Length: 360
Length: 157
Image 1 (cartoon, rainbow over the protein chains, first blue to last red):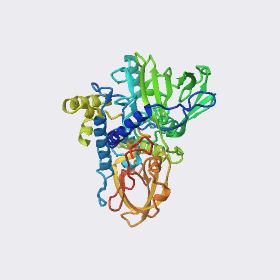
Image 2 (tube, each protein chain N blue to C red; image 1 turned 30 degrees about the vertical axis):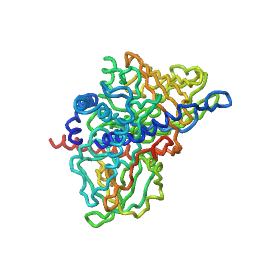
Image 3 (cartoon, rainbow over the protein chains, first blue to last red; image 1 turned 60 degrees about the vertical axis):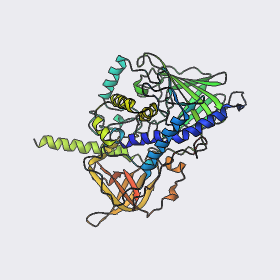
Image 4 (spheres, rainbow over the protein chains, first blue to last red; image 1 turned 180 degrees about the horizontal axis):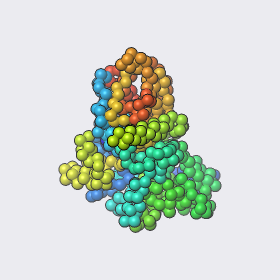
């Protein structure tokens, strides 16, 4: 609940920034000269902050964009909620309730932590001067197509197994999946600091609506590097190259790129069978298009294809806005005491259960 | 909000979202509906598996060490337990990157600062560790404040 509250807060507080972004987007949509690299291609380099209030999908019945007034209200409400989260509380407060504080989801009934730690974004994303209500633009209803019946079965089977092939864990506690806490290898990839959780490094590279949303692009004629702040995932896009043999599989897939006019097109295949973007298979195929649309803005467009998961391809887009912010070190393993704590907690539970059984 | 979440906790996310949408579509505007379409948030790790909801703790003491590591900081706090003995507890916080972006650095948080933390102890009770559900100064002021915006040039100032 606390984490969800964070998200709601994020959505709300972002409202004020949206308006500013809108105006900015309008300003930048006037004439600007694309800076070019020595090889003549547009310079896409920079550090970009993907934090946004615009969700991946929008609710049924909601239009693709909103008015500046609507955005302002939502952003103001978000900011207010955020301020409430920052408000002073009693210094002589009691400990939280025994049995849990009612949190659900990722926080699993024990709560998360104060808003101050989070950086989920404060504005809605603006593309073509429109304040967007979803990243998904095709299907036109702004929603990811439903998984096929086959995919649903596969996902249900996955949930019944240990969670090592999920990037993150939203277990409410220790009781979800038998075997999921048996050893470090059965824990999710994000928890083990192997790749970022959510789909931050992707592809597709999406906002995580939480924190650490920065990405850095470094470009040469032969390769384009995209560094993702979260768990310092790095993608190296090999330009004008063939894909690796299908026997070679990578956490973030194998990315090759080419220029389509002034747009960088990145084609990614060869995912592992553990990556599972939204329950996809290792045959996931992602095509990303990066276009400079302003001095501070790239348009990022992604098309997702995996016939074993969705009956049709689907596409999303968002503006990547440049930031002056620095990307900081992500030494995830160094203080990842959580993983040990989780496994020790599971062994405690095993002992309790064994003792209860012996006592019968 | 909390009550709503509690009632819905056993339902799948899609169903919950649908229920919310159905309710809010009838009451509020499109904008309100959009606001409620909070994307599911992934956490770095399973909080509920790490911490014991039956072991709430309230820690009052001074900071003796801070580990500023992404994605989880750890604050070490020396307290005096009920038996009058000194104990050092480790408290899990969030990502220091977010703090750095608003100008909070290692130097902003002085060792020796008196803090109050409420949270839950790890499931292994031999460890003196807890989550930093709320980390405040003695008077209840939040130690770290969030701010709208990220410092990006397009953000509102």
